[in-house]
Length: 304
Image 1 (cartoon, rainbow, N blue to C red):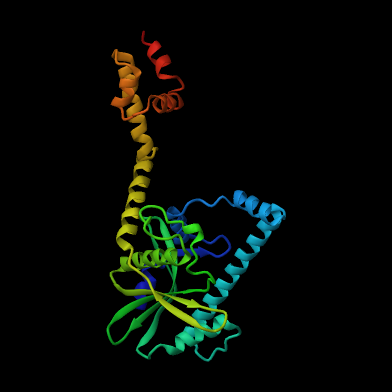
Image 2 (cartoon, helix red, strand yellow; image 1 turned 60 degrees about the vertical axis):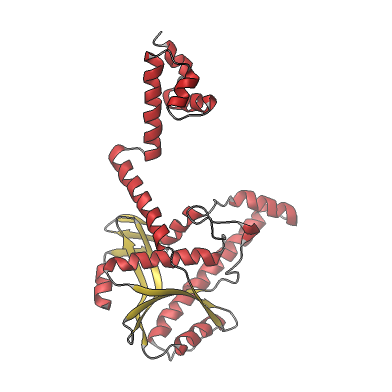
């Protein structure tokens, strides 16, 4: 089974420095970037200005502090995953800090029939153009089932900033690290199950600096994620074939229809705007001029 899994994804390449995935020279979107589709864009400069004003320090000081914390978090995450990968294969290794101690305790707690199947498995989908790395896949020799696990070391796993929600189709979820990780694990499951094997369940292993850990099962969001991925895939295919997005194509179609009506009918501009899907004449005129370089009145004048 393991050989088959690794062979299926053998074409993927990962560049650590740029955190980028490629397959046969084609760039793929990391799963972490897919998650940004469901978050409001973060205006770093604007937020840094507000924080700096509140604290009475410079914007540069705020940004430097944020960037240091981000870099420290990345280093911690990398070290945690490296130790986890090594300890899963060699339980004689000695932890050097609380996080590693937590990982060791977790692995030691597992029964003999739960065995590592794949560690740090890099997976991808060419159709959807995405890729990601799953921390742990365990095989249950008693039940013949596969379990997906992921280490997390955030100190604020459930923090929800100002009660924000994620964006559609996940507007029912709080914008918290935990919920984003739930989506992340569902995406990993989608990528893995392309092979034909099924994952029984998913869980986060929340490791802490004091050497303890907690296990949080995660919900299954595959249906909504697959619908989102398919929509993006069809949009990409459409754009490749016609050179424009579906939304732009529809706008162009409507405005071309408006051009015909302006040239060949006596309908008012308001009537034409409404007939091509615009309820507001001002919005119609703005869109028309942006696309055609002339106002609807100027366009009509060319044919009078």
